[in-house]
Amino acid sequence: MEDLTALKRKVQQYKDILANTEAYRKTWNESFRAEIVKMLETMIAETGLDATVEVSSELENLESIVCSLGQGKSGIFQKVNENLNRPLIKHKGSLIYQQLFNGKIVVLIAFPNIENYGQPQPPKQIAIYRPEELKEPFFVRHMEDFIKEVTKWEDYDDDDPQPSQRIGFRMDMPEAAE
Image 1 (cartoon, rainbow, N blue to C red):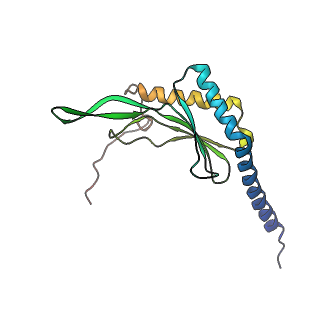
Image 2: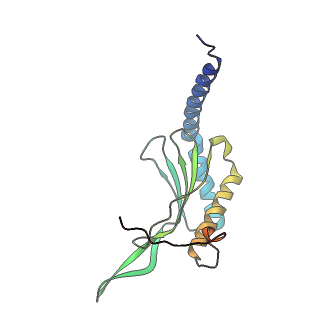
Image 3: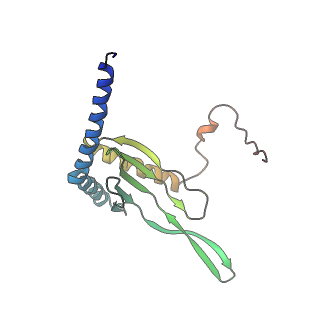
């Protein structure tokens, strides 16, 4: 039989990763979930941001912590008939810390959107972390990024060049009929 040294290393690496997953999950459940909630609630209180923090735990070991700016009136109405208007609700955006299947934590920004008005943007992934990598400065930076993104969304205009328009020609071609 051939030398199995390389295979043994790969098997050990696999076992180490499985053990890490268990350790990350244990850390999340024993302390880290509460630390994230506390960190977010402290930033909300210190800055006066109108937001809430919720733990979503429908699936064990796939929990998420959502710092949400909530929902509200968009100021836009759909005219149903002469006497009736239906308001369109605005979801103001969220900063999300979610466990992945392997116990690591993905940080996402869910952009604001107005129901029934265009397609919502997909969430922006900031990064994926092991629990021990997330320290206080990261949380502050994530919140700053989140506030920057929702502010940019609220102040949308065409003054900023679109990434696809920086170089070369942009030609919008009609899609061919199938």
